[in-house]
Length: 253
Length: 253
DNA sequence: CAGTAACGCGTATGTCATACGCAGTAGAGG
DNA sequence: CCTCTACTGCGTATGACATACGCGTTACTG
Figure 1 (spheres, chains in turn purple, cyan, orange, yellow):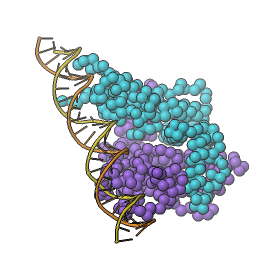
Figure 2 (tube, protein in one colour; figure 1 turned 120 degrees about the vertical axis):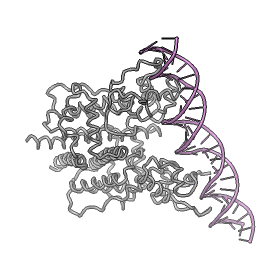
Figure 3 (cartoon, chains in turn yellow, cyan, purple, green; figure 1 turned 90 degrees about the vertical axis):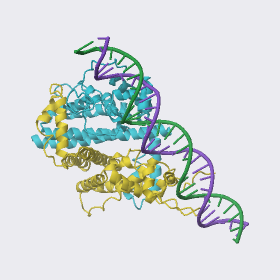
Figure 4 (cartoon, chains in turn green, brown, yellow, blue; figure 1 turned 30 degrees about the vertical axis):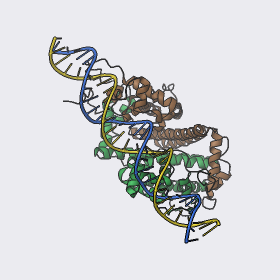
């Protein structure tokens, strides 16, 4: 009495095996009126229009005109739906850059493309992380990152670490942007107003005696200028690439 | 009919103003049987022993032997409790390094100290981020980071960006570690076993035709070695510091 | 000593994920 | 052609959860 047929023997939840293209439709029973694909699409659309918080099993089902519990025939749990939403939203990585592109340019493109994905789906960053990527598109992005590093001559372990490092940076920076966007939406202010309000609050609270360096930073006006929204991203990416370059040059030098 | 006295005029929620030392105890009414401090302590202890998911208002109240709704006399909402827990857990930053310490060593110490905090309180990384730091200890850590960068001669804006960058890295890397720890706890495996299982799953799913670079990385054995748990952290930090160093040298050179 | 603000808390509401079981459906084997 | 059975959709129920509201009580102020 096997609970579910495990088509691939992967031990993966059924919805995920479906994402990898394993697990063909069984030939018995009524024709399914739903599909994992439709469910995930509805959930993604909902997250896009009303935020991740609006994505509840009941709400997704209502959107599809079915009952809540129907969904559980297709996804094992809500976390599984999250994973599938993630994979759907990140999509395929961009085409590889023209041959002969240097690793630095290639990695920068990769980072920018990933950032664009996060900005198109800000809710992605609100999904609680549960583990390493194990969906087709996640792996494809990883692949693209590794490929971009091919010209470096770094060993495999170092390439993995660099991809992890840059990917983490992009995610983190996008998270800050998403927070800012959320604050803007909540209060109806512009980015400058949000930052200015934050600076004002801090000036009020943070005693310059106790926090002299912070006070200096606040005084300098570096916090309340009309900041280029991409500035932090570009700054961080340049530092990161410079750091990797030092390693690359030391390795093959 | 003012809803609550806003002692500082900061517009901050009451629990937060308490954290900053504003808002003295009002001289009316019965003596409070609780305090924000005791509530936060109980919540932190609960998170430490049973994870952040165990921290519900009802559960914290039970731990304190009071009713659920009592807590709302001290914290305005659960998110506020989260913020206070965060501030309590990160605590004060370490003492500044001896004078004459170089910026690179200073920043590395700062990063390591921050990482130690996250590892002592893994639940910290599960708290949904809601905005920029506005609690005393967060600002103190920021202060310490800025101070470490004083010898660089970078301008204030660049110092802020570097602190943001390194802080984000630490947080991100700690998050990965926390995921690994969670997986270990869930399955009762060692870190090596978890990584090996992940590698096996990926080898099973990821077609080497479609993901050649990933396949190469898997083949190389870089994934399943008995990895030094600090390796990724050290690697990333070195890259980051190298990148910053390039900027510093270019600036004052 | 009266007035009042702050206290603790009981009750109630609405939302959520999800376990369980039932009835109807459609393809497979006889 | 008919029955058997795996699989479908879904109604119901459970137990957590955050939190609004309002009541009785307390202890300081004028």
